[in-house]
Image (cartoon, rainbow, N blue to C red; front, top):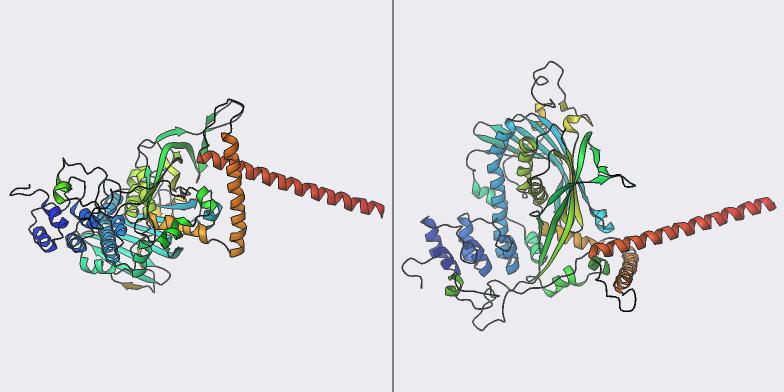
Length: 581
């Protein structure tokens, strides 16, 4: 079929797992390691889907891109987890973190060069994670990113380091970036242990083997992935539209304005923001599946955590099939672009549930704010987004064509029960003074500059504190690695595990009452109004939530009314007894 010059030579070597020939072909540098086959897979994606570990190892050694997503929106690491192979997951995860780190480090000199041209500043970014679900709200953390910028030096302080073993990890950490002629000096300062990891970056990354070795994940980390669902949460903003919020009553409506951090801001709603959540479970054992989704309480089902639908990517297994090629597709069939595979596919048959929800994001935009989103703030968000999933979502949102003004506050959905509210404040210490930041005296060169908000930053904030131990570039953990799938699973497990046993029993009884109320409201809303009346459609999830909240509010009001009546009866009884005396 292929003739003297076979198409997709790397892919064909991967298909047969002829990894020694694959190594030789890559050494020749005559082939594109990122070429896509007729099914949209790169050689690495194909090797992972087929479970060919040796070919995966060869491709990763030759820097195949681990960060690429498939046509269906799944990352290479997620496909590796679906194989259920711990060695595969460990290998792909290690190179994923390594490539993230090198990408972040390689982009720092360009970032600092952009900042060099911008006015100096200090600003705080407050992240608040909020939810309308009470149990989730209890576990929602918050954090304040403190950012100092002076010339080509940048410092970012944080206290929320991520989560591990289902608990939030806290610690005082600073990331300092100092521009130099040939590159940049990067320092990660651990204030709790008084340790500083330093690395000097040039045009090329030094000692990649040493950095790769530090990225090897623990066995516990690999095991946690293999026993957790694969969750992909995507914020779809293709059809987003912005409109001004209104305020006022009695027929008089005006465009809403609010003061945020001392700046007048126009309030906008972003409509048609869709949150797409997909969950895969084909790699889980029956026990893991029951732990993650089978033992749902009525409250979890109410939250929409139940499986919506399942899809399997293959016809019945044929005799010549293998676990990673369940429908026995031949290489000639696979590599022929004119051959339709229909429902057949390679890889373990997918078990997937999906959920799409529409949200309104909210923006507070100030046209008076002196910070420049493009010149001063976006480079910092770009830097953090490389290794921080939440910053990546923020970047994807604010790179849209926003209405005019600086986004002093933004509220966007992260998951179907979790929002992030980001507020910019304390610009140059104007709200809460800092010893490291001050407004220059009138007549000074900085005060006379063209900056709309002149600010001077103490150069000492970019130095290593006295008494700290300075080490090399070795790191004990990837920087700020917060994966959506693990966070989503942590939220679900927190719902299962929150509270004492007695509290869980009480909560479970309340959940049963809530479910009964929802069922009653559903029945009432779908009953015909009279003989011959058409049956109304069942209410949406949002309508069910509204009905449940109204019912809860009525019960609360009735309880308070009963309490007031009892208190009044008690007061009257006391007064009568005093009168009789």
